[in-house]
Length: 248
Length: 248
Image 1 (cartoon, chains in turn green, blue):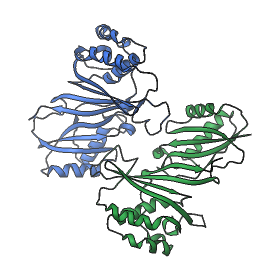
Image 2 (cartoon, chains in turn purple, green; image 1 turned 180 degrees about the vertical axis):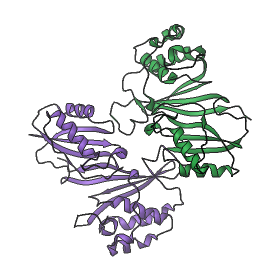
Image 3 (cartoon, chains in turn red, blue; image 1 turned 90 degrees about the horizontal axis):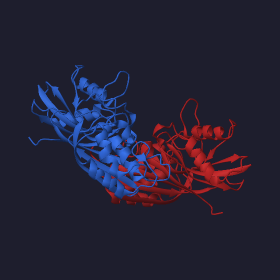
Image 4 (cartoon, one colour; image 1 turned 30 degrees about the vertical axis):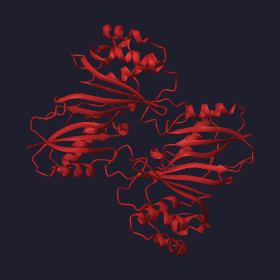
């Protein structure tokens, strides 16, 4: 068997998220359907670096699967791209060692969240950004960010629906930059909990808007209480941008 | 009765086109549903500058309707935007004279067509551009454009399905510009026939790609034969950008 690693990109709009769910259109089920067609109907299990929710996009999700076939790796990319629907693309395919694991070997992940600051309703942004046309003090947001960096127990920034026990994560970087009237938040960390970025974003926007105070962030973290943090912003502004692995 | 003119924008992806069709989601039916709600269930007829096909987008479509209500025009925009789905927006609302007509008073229209030159499959462009990763000689396209400008019988560049008899139209301008790896074609004319821009685009791309010769354009026009021109490119790259009216 050969293990293939693929970097994939998808527009999350028309998916009920990454993971297989009965009677729902998901990224994983589309991948497994395409791979089964390439394997004469035989099931091929796909393992991803992690799930993404309904409406959440990916520029650089990583998956792996095993195959008995020996074909040039360019053909995996071409073959999968022709069988996959238009809203999923294989950006890169690589043959990797049998021990490579898309989830367990990930050393860091980067997500970006896009906030439209336009006061005008914009049909072309609705699936790709979160619209927040209200006042924002970016300096207050930057102060709050400084309290979030580093290693913390992020229970307060995690959906209560999670099954994960250890909620300690390390955020390496949160960069904030502007592209015209769009604000982009770039998060890099060793891993993120269920809904963590969307709750971090809701909290940062409430701080920028004066609804919460930036100096309260250490208390919010210490409270280990989801209700202490801000609300969960919508998934459509969120992109899984890149998954990093140890250089082999 | 007061006549209201609205400039609207829509993402055409999820619509079966502009015009009402039985059991289909169309822009016109969404507009008329929202207006009926604002008029206590009473039907309000909406007239547009023209139709757009399934998947075709609009940045500046223009419509008009009549209403017995006297409300500030800002409220029309706000009210309609809150009742309309997220993929249609009213960009501007104006009270106009009773004699204004969105279709008959239009003096010029601008359409833009977006061509992605990327060799990479891109899920985020699939609904918004036409992907053409093949070689293109822009100089040949510009030569062909020079033959299309002005007043011609565009029968060869019109879908055979049209009911329009007079196929003489004037193209004022075709501008070609590059934005990164995206080619944008800007068409301005006094009016365009059914599928005309999509057939012009198919022909221009075939000329740029060496499948047709630019000097053949006058012959294609003279033949008044749809089969002499290039193929019809997909609707998702096309945007109704602006409709011009006489200054009142």
